[in-house]
Length: 201
Image 1 (cartoon, one colour):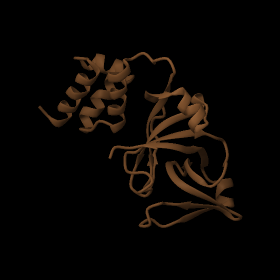
Image 2 (cartoon, one colour; image 1 turned 180 degrees about the vertical axis):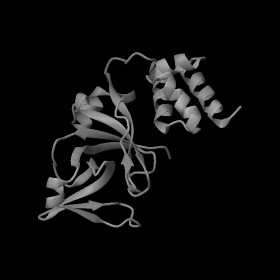
Image 3 (cartoon, one colour; image 1 turned 120 degrees about the vertical axis):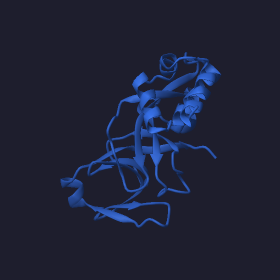
């Protein structure tokens, strides 16, 4: 049995399923997505978070919890990752009180993404999960998910009179700038501000 088959068996054991079609239904993904995992030889880390949620709470959202959509795209903390599919593949459960009171955000306005790369280390490790609060424009200096020239990026943005400074928390990566002219004429869009992160140790 291959490593990927072992991982799938682990997911089935966690979710109490025996067939791929049942596993896909419980995890909120398509059976073709599972075939893609097998083809690539890799299962996204976020899926194990989802399986843990199912193991703890079942497939029905418990009272006092909300389902936050997890999108099957990766925001790059490196050189950039093209967005190919923005359909939510699954979701994770969060306490509604935690989202509304502790974090201060509306559950319907947040979503989850995976981070790929190491340019935001130590703040965000490779394959960290981030919660993004949707906004149309800048709120203040902070960590944002944004689209620039066809790439989906997660970086620390600092606002300057002449444009935006794009900062990587990892000192091995150079800071760069997006000028006001580029903001007006190039493909640039703020997707949202990173308000929470979760990662495996």
